[in-house]
Image (cartoon, rainbow, N blue to C red; front, side):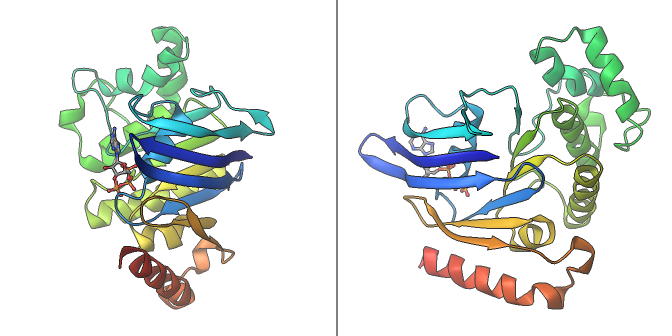
Length: 246
Ligand SMILES: Nc1ncnc2c1ncn2[C@@H]1O[C@H](COP(=O)(O)OP(=O)(O)OP(=O)(O)O)[C@@H](O)[C@H]1O
């Protein structure tokens, strides 16, 4: 279990996050949604240990009951968009997270190579990111994140740059990968449809200063999440978000 208690983030006199507490289960998707600017990215960056040092953050984070000192080796962070380095090949990009964790380039290559086929990237190893479609780049970024074998993954709007069809495919694809290999995922999204299709739990943040105002478990199996089955939850979320932005 990943846990944040009483996180407050300030920018000078302005309070961005106000005594926010949340938990992330070790084997499911927890979605964090909220009005634009409420601080979703700041929470996830703080957990990842990359919050702008100009911001003042106070609060505690624990993993399995022990203090979490970010950057924590059990957490992988994937920023908004795919964030691949354009001057590296797809294989070099895919292995970068492992190299940053101390593995040699050769070991990283050996570890990532078998994953190109299941990630739909066979034959792309020596191409550059600019030669791939948006969906392929996103899969390469997921490969780089997931191959690090961390127990927890922090995803900041991972599908926001994709077109609607690729986005739906990638959502299904990621859920399937997480069913194969369960991880604890904290995912920021703006998209109610995405949150209700993918999440095991949705945490709704208030407008700035951000804190958690609602915690909604989604118990319907993903395969049974039809429009009708999700209508009430979506309507409740829409109302909450409209209230927060009014
Ligand atoms: N380095 C910074 N200095 C000052 N204010 C900042 C800084 N970084 C973020 N902010 C402010 O903190 C607030 C929260 O920003 P953050 O990006 O975390 O929100 P968000 O909910 O992820 O936004 P969005 O949904 O639009 O991506 C915003 O009002 C933003 O302007």
